[in-house]
Length: 130
Image (tube, rainbow, N blue to C red):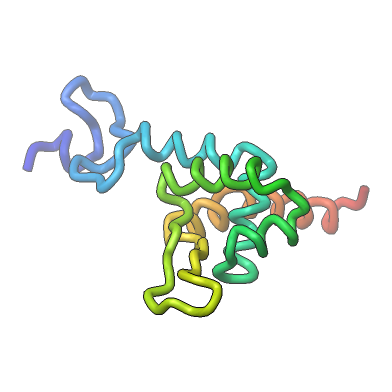
């Protein structure tokens, strides 16, 4: 293995942002970050992580977001892989039940990103007062 590969540098000597065989591209990571940069999408992901899987109706009621707006944001979260839409296999009187849940990537980006910064702010306020 060449020295540049071991040190994380690319062929031009710059530090590589991701491992050579990363599962995701830098663009995909940035798309995820942009997705939760929107308050509604952040709140949706936060609720799914905290409360577990929910139907679109349950999410809309909990967040007080109109259905069409909610579906727009859910689609954006699904498109970048932070949330997945699952359908129950068995049919009930109400038909097939569709629900949304946070993916492991969704949980990770929430916990290691925005929430980590929020916790740090609370810790600084506690340490130094307002």
